[in-house]
Structure formats: structure tokens, C-alpha cells
Length: 246
Image 1 (cartoon, rainbow, N blue to C red):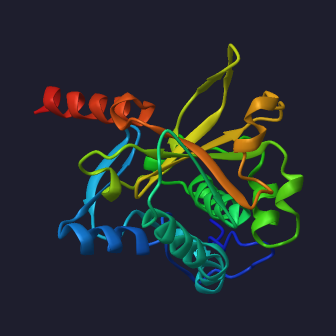
Image 2 (cartoon, rainbow, N blue to C red; image 1 turned 180 degrees about the vertical axis):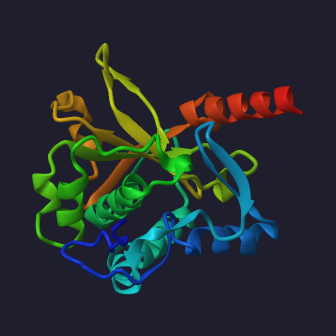
């Protein structure tokens, strides 16, 4: 006899689950409103489909826990990222003071955590490699995000290109080459921004310290040309795959 699924929120025994989204619905809604079309959510080469309100799972969270994540992280982060997106940035680097960067970090952690606990095939390449439970503790305020030292977030802004302001995606597994070593991480493109997540217990080279968002109230980063990024390469590979299958 199989056991019923229960909510994955910290200490939550509820078995009455709802359809929980991985990326807050506010992002695709805003894109649809501004572009007038449907949105594409993609996770590496595993999934592509036109979705109006993003990918979801009805087997991970109850309404209370999903609502908690929405109030604590999704809604305020959407407002913050939207306000930053409306600002004029001067390339090649930017420095914006008085930004709640820990909010951005915990929001991105909430997205990654939801993806990592899902059994959906489209998300089977997203794994917090042993940090799933500590991430849950951080999200439910049972642990400080500063104590999750293996988790770091950096930010870039895409140079203007058609479509980059309307781009959002599930986290894309991406290896980072730093100082001759490979680091495990993810890229999360969101309405013109490129958030880079590193999940690795090793210390980053010290010259990256000013750009780490964790614990900072200043958003520092650089511009990047979308066609030259890892995610653009993945998108081209996906298009090539579709052409071969057509």
C-alpha cells in the first residue's frame, strides 16, 4: 500500500496539495502583458513548451506553504526585480546601493528548492546535492542563509537584444570555470537579468567577493552578451534538436 504524498514544507504533514509553480506566475504574466504573446519556459534540452503561467507540480506543497513562499520571497522579489529592470544601467559594470540582495538570494533558493524536490522529468537535472534540507530550513527561517555557505549568487545584466527582457527560464544547470577549476551551479535568466548560482563548499577566489550577493546591500555585477552565454548555446542546441526531429 502506497503512502499518500504530503507537503514538503518544513514540518508540514498536510496531504491536501495544490498546483505549485516553480517560477512565480507574476513573471510570465508581466511578459505576456508587455509582449502580447505566450511565454516559453525551458529547462536545458529536456523541456520546451509554450506556457502562459509557467511550469507547476501538484505533488510538492500545500496551499499554506505555497502561500508562505509567495509572501516571503516570490512577491517581494518580483517587485524588486521589476523595479531594477526598469532602471537605467550603464555598461560594462553596475553598482546599485540599498538593494536587499539577501531577498534575491532566498528567492532564487526557493525556486531551486521547489525544482529539486519535484519528481517531474523536466526538472530531474536540478539537484541541490545534499543541501535540500538545509535550504528548506533557510526558507522557513530555521537557519540563517549566511550559514548555508556553499550557496552563493552573483548577478549579470544582458546587453540589449531583442527578446532578452522577455526571457525567463527554469534554472539551467551550468558548469562554471573559475581559476582553472569547474564549479557546480545554475543560471537563472529573469527579465533581463542573469543570476548565477554556485553550490560548492569551496571558497571562491577573493576577487569575486564584491560580486557575491549573499549578505550584501549593494547589487554589483557586469554586462554579458546573451549570444555568448551558456544558456544561449543550450537554446541553439535545442533548436538544432527540433530541426533534426522535424
